[in-house]
Amino acid sequence: NAGVTQTPKFRVLKTGQSMTLLCAQDMNHEYMYWYRQDPGMGLRLIHYSVGEGTTAKGEVPDGYNVSRLKKQNFLLGLESAAPSQTSVYFCASSGDYGRSNQPQHFGDGTRLSIL
Amino acid sequence: DQQVKQNSPSLSVQEGRISILNCDYTNSMFDYFLWYKKYPAEGPTFLISISSIKDKNEDGRFTVFLNKSAKHLSLHIVPSPPGDSAVYFCAAGKGGGADGLTFGKGTHLIIQP
View 1 (cartoon, chains in turn blue, cyan):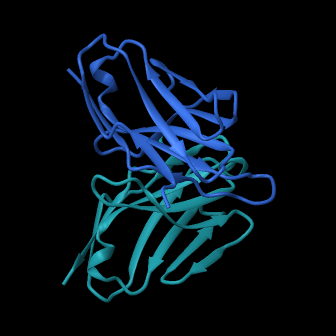
View 2 (cartoon, chains in turn orange, yellow):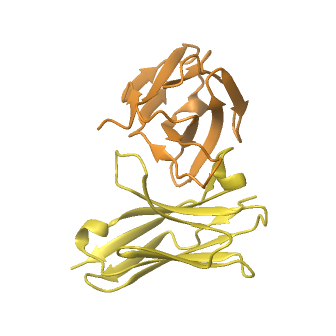
């Protein structure tokens, strides 16, 4: 019963390096989301996807790119990491909103430090 | 501008008593409200939600109340065992939350023995 799986769990990068965070869900969900959480703050939406091949910007998209080539996977990329991107990143997914409201289900997060 | 506010960073409750967590919002377009529980080093876990067309929703030990005129919701947890000690986030969405949720900063609930 995996649900939403995020890899890696921890990573340390140097300023200017690039990396990709992977999110995988096994619930056949249409919608997927990337959030970041900073100390003392709530989660803030970075990007989201309403289906395979589609992505959209959230509240704090600058410095990030995303791709949804497969329904079950949602990738978050940092092209040139900056110390301000040090954060805990959470991925979430939810089902079809067409008939009823759907809660989002979260992974356990990726803790990213940029030196 | 914070659209979802949890004004109590922490709340201490005696074991076995009722816990009441509060949340205020400013955006009248929100139509779906959720509560999540989060332990350290884990992701948020969904607890309960409520649509803006309702004013109360119950699920086991959890009850959420929505006062649309006051733009206020609350989560009641009865009773409160030590395992309930965690950070609780209030979240809200438009269009059922399809284009993402807006979160409050969280309330750290501490259950005292």
